[in-house]
Length: 369
Ligand code: NDP
Ligand code: GDR
Image 1 (spheres, rainbow, N blue to C red):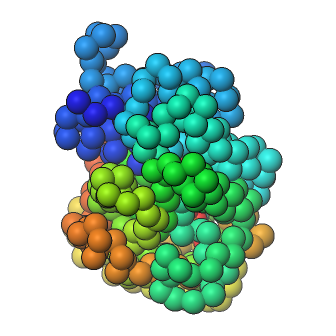
Image 2 (cartoon, rainbow, N blue to C red):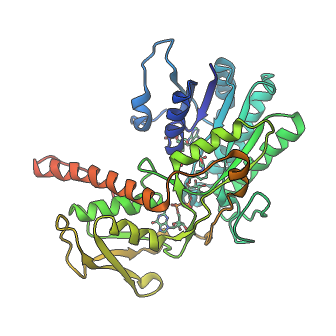
């Protein structure tokens, strides 16, 4: 039986990957952070208790803690390490640049060095969660494995270090250490402050009467959005290759944030039209065809709040999936329409439950970023 160790197991990708690997018969170990609140919601359904024969085990740890990482890798002796743990929010990285550098950049070095110190370079394969944010300021499109990097945030700069230290350990010590350069991928498990989830939650809260309007930043940004379920399969495929190589994982289709909003509202029968420019742009309901959700025509459902703009922005991401399709045989199962539909449906279900609780006189907290 193969053993995998996943950092960031409590995150979106970690939870899908854990499920995927357990289905493949792996023993899965995950690193979770100590938190003052429960933080294992996304993987609670996989938990088997403290049974020594359990195939799914969680361990306390942190990417900033070298000795902890060395001990965990020594104890678990993994065949594969997936380094998904990170301070993953681009906007927040401008507020916490040093922490981001430590966890996202040096954290990767700590994993590589731990494997080397423990003499596991022949046994343990390492996957590094690299990102399309490395491309940053547009140099060429579509972006492929050979496109030059130009990071535009402390997050992307930290991930640039992680990318190159992974390449360096592969070349210097002959390790199977590889980068998956993944473009944006989303799901109903996506963190609530990333734009797609903020939009689908907003749509669900608006149609259930729990919120009037979504406040957003740059609607012109374009992203190549896929589904996290498809992307974790690509991570695994990258580690199953004979030769360690870096891969771009993307759909090859790009969409503006504005278009994502339009598609999300259409999912509940609401047509939204945009007018105005810059910070004065608004999205207004122009049609409402679903009798279940009676939104008044003219209701403003999208406003711009400059607080959500970034000091430096990544305007256009569109990946070239040629290499991953040819060499890994990877094909995404979801398209954007399927992704939006699944996310909106899941959030509508969530907020219908809140609405029901409210009606019953219970308090609900619908946190709005
Ligand atoms: P999430 O933000 O959902 O999850 C991040 C995970 O990292 C969480 O489990 C979090 O723990 C953990 N983490 C944060 N800080 C630390 C730390 N100091 N030590 C250990 N673990 C930590 O991210 P995703 O699942 O979306 O992304 C997974 C990885 O892939 C990240 O590295 C991200 O940068 C990268 N990536 C993501 C893309 C995407 O579109 N989703 C695209 C390209 C790359 P906790 O739950 O306690 O906060
Ligand atoms: P990104 O994702 O920065 O691409 O990083 P995010 O969803 O945060 O932003 C995408 C684009 O939407 C614009 N935007 C807003 N973003 C947020 N979060 N909130 C808003 O209100 C808002 N309004 C507009 C942003 O400016 C941006 O252009 C994600 C993360 O998962 C990274 O960890 C990962 O590496 C990359 O994707 C690939």
